[in-house]
Amino acid sequence: MNKKLLLGAILLVIQNCAVIAQTDNEGLGPDVDVLIKDKLINVSINFNEPFRWENTRFDSIKTFPMRGGAELSHTIRFEGGNNLNWRQTDMVFSGTYLIKESSAKELLAQYNEKHGGFGISTWTVNKEGNLKTFNESTGSYEVLAPKVFAERFGLDFYSDKFSIEASVSGYLLEIMGKFNKQSNLLNFDTLDYMPFFSVPNLEIEESVDLRDWAKVELPNKLPSEYQWPQGLILNLGNVSNSGKFYRVKILNN
Image (cartoon, rainbow, N blue to C red; front, side):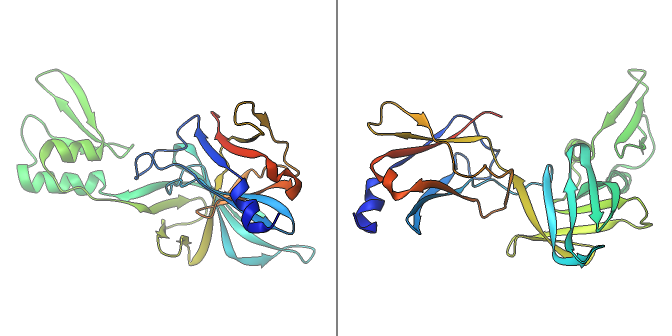
């Protein structure tokens, strides 16, 4: 069977058992293609996940010498709770990050200019970066996040989900990070970094009749991460499997 006929004999059916991520393009699922190389069947999967900071690893393009002669990239891991870890060769720095947006201090200045800073509800900025006031009518404190505060009082609020401001231990000043949507690289402290996402929990199944399906045992272990937004290429084995049908299932984590 020649390659053209072989490609036509393989059917891939995508079954999403769970939404991969909240996307800007509602309902956009993974794209799957079949590739034939060196008499092996490979499946290319692009998960179409939107960009995110949380739970993402970034490796610098530039590498740096280590003890023993090896070279290694610098690595930033953005974790939950707005925490980050930044490894530079054999040293690790911890810190926090925030998406670049209007601060409580900036919004309070807008509010005072627009409404005046005196009266029954005088607002201040608390240590968490929210806005706080004591309401004499209710006898209790009210705390609002900056975005909610801006919406309530008709203030200008900006947010850039591709820019962050990081506070890192050992650094006196905040470090600005900017993700470039054209190059898909993060510029952070003068270096460019590539993003890596965790691979969703998935299975590939095969069938000869499209009724009974069996899980495919992949020749190689499924990687834990992939370089975003490129996706994965998985080997399904020799072209002798060409008489079968395949489907990719994205499972619940």
